[in-house]
Image 1 (tube, rainbow, N blue to C red):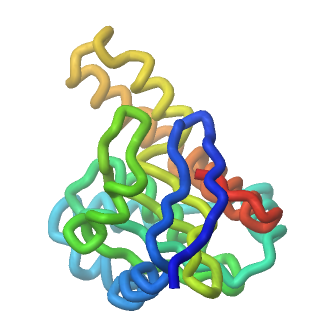
Image 2: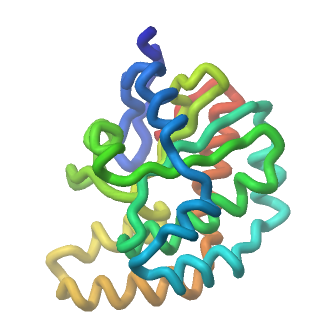
Length: 201
């Protein structure tokens, strides 16, 4: 059966896809848990562990996410060597752990290539991480792509103005200071919107 969603365009310019729910079910069932991903990680292994260990979810974020009745599933396309994945996915996992009825599974960019291509960044790229919110029937109810809104907008606004290494240095400093806070606000907003019958993507 094909998932039917009403695309809602956000400031990012992305829309929800119409990938069949049967495909999402298969991908989710082949995904690994956060614990398994951490154990298997080779690139940035220490950073993955550190970010996961220090992940704290603010009460306000929990309240927003818990306002949406589930159950929900978070399908995450991520790779261990990705600087955006390592600075966002551990915190998303921490949020999922504190929400009743929420499961998270991770697939790599090869297995999840179709998901990435269907959810491109504002500048037209398939990227990791890509997070898809699924309902109990594996129908897509939201998506979140690559990096927090605030950081994404800064990078897009400074492309061509700053050198690539300057943008990268700012990005990593921003992530280190933010400690997942903006990522979790975005994810909670996506879940909250789904609870209201909206697709935030």
